Length: 524
Image (cartoon, rainbow, N blue to C red):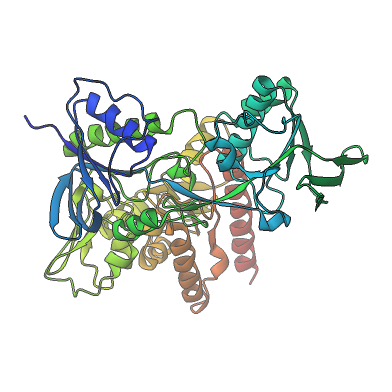
């Protein structure tokens, strides 16, 4: 049996480490790089005797079709084109660094270096020259601190403090220590004698003296004391940005990016290595600070392959009916997982489909079918929770995202939270799967009120499902105002899975509103 093929993009130590780990797991590996693909000196785990890792040097990715289990890749160099089929893809391209000298009005010299300069010389003072008795590190004073840079600053300060006998100070803005291992590193730095000066409302003043040394004047904000430092070396932080190669790969692969342009959205569901496209993993120093990004990425690939082997028993993916499809490409544009491919007509790549239902809800011709999420099936779920009679407590239909409000509702019931209402919970994979017609139909099937409960903004697994849900609720509310039903009978509230108390409060408040509306109607 032929080993499954994995394609790793990048020529970094991290890329080679991932390739070696996956090769040891019995997978066939191809490493592709725009330049010469050769293992860096610091790359580990390349054991002698292991099967070689195939390399594609000097190539660029031209196109990618298919999905997890069968990505059809097309590469080209200056002369030829090469095709490759891979079960999963790993992007481990290097980041790019821009020293922030200009932000501090400083120039590179013997007494002023960038963080990368210091790293290149092994984080050691020169064999000949001025000893580094005092070293000042600048971190996040002019731009927002990056966890990767903060980690490297602290690690370098510890090394100079303990091995070179330097007295190190870190002048920092918002020190980012939430990433894995950073808080422990900060404690280690303090224990080693590194001094931290944090600035929230003021900034230090820098001036260059004769000879190139930098004088730093500042007020220590916690104590109000004035300080002046004239260190032997000032180490300037750097701004991290994605490489042009990574940006190009993200565009071809249809990957979401964050505010800095890195090909991983600022979405908690993507951390630490996932992307919006199943089977595509990102790794490397610019993605997250952690003890072993190569290990995380390798495990993510193995998890993808394992899930592919169990997909046969999973719920079926979306299907597009050719006879109804008018090739408007709405599904292609809106799919947050790049699961819609274009042939003569759009088609769904089953292994890439997450069954969020956004495509089916938005299709103007209702040409997309997802078993379990068809409108007649949703109507049945709505009707099954209708109370026997019109009297009594308000009857509420709650459309809940299965990743957030659904678990929160079950947790609220398990914790004994109560509400004076009859609640029919209708869980959907994503609130973005709700068509306006289904939301409105709940009123015709006995609901006094309807709750739509998506994830919080920027926390939707399907990227924009919560925004689409809000748009449809607004559309349904405008329709309800026309016949006089009242849009206040339809409410949208965002929730997370760990908010059962808030869920109970939402249902209780909505029930009270509906009871008041019923009382007012009887009075009239």
